[in-house]
Image (cartoon, rainbow, N blue to C red; front, side, top):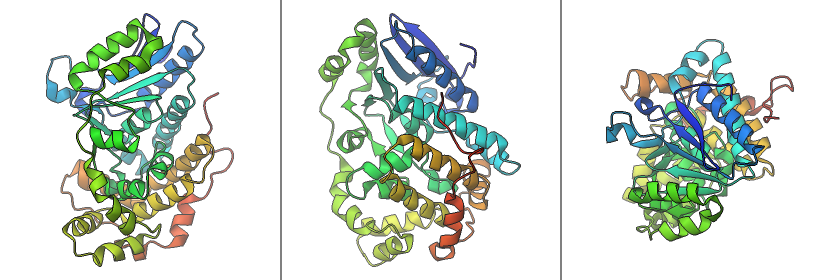
Length: 359
């Protein structure tokens, strides 16, 4: 395989291929080289009759510091995207194009894939775990799509996955960026198994020894999770987040005096109105998609535009660069984001510029 980067390790052990994210200083956030290396490895293993399954996890910190191994994958290289978006956007588009091809490759992969979502699993980490056939949550799992807080939207297939969750939970997650724990991931179907983190090494060793028995291995090691806390708010979520019109969501929350509803209202007031509207439309249209490639094609067009708009550059400044956590969104209110602006963001790209799957 030709693409080399120390930020991701690709190797094979006794018929089982392994992808190990290895960028602990950034909680294994993805960059373009990592996505390209993973894509190339997946394609090589796809046609290798000696490979029976693929395991995806994160490597331990070389110095053994558990704090540096606290996440599976925190997302993508946001600083690079913002720096590129402030200029010509070329590097940002290259990242999205490569990442989405890798996401699509995983989604359509025929061989069993197993993702170990131990720790922080956000943004790009969601994009590499949810396409997998087996998705392992633990007591450490914290899964979220928090993009509206930096003027972005839940991409990497978010429009597909979130729109297929029960009721309006997907819309709630997309707008608020709420963090799900491992038990909640299992209850919502985002995870297929719940294992104690202490048993993950055993699970991996057993799979490598017998890759044709993944179901039995994971079933044997799985434990009953705690209660899924989000389900206690299911009725409120379905009622308050019922509309695909952001103004209606705000109106419903404003009219509900319940402490939980008011907490969500205060949270939404910190998010980008523009990309909250983008997110609602993305999920509405994603629910109607029949092909994951169509979803990725649309998200690529949206991403190419959003990454160069004011709210993303301002969100990254406020949350990641200056860390003052006081972004000045423009427009500042849902009413200020016109349907025309959203239509512009969602307009298809030309055939020459559009995203295409990997051959």
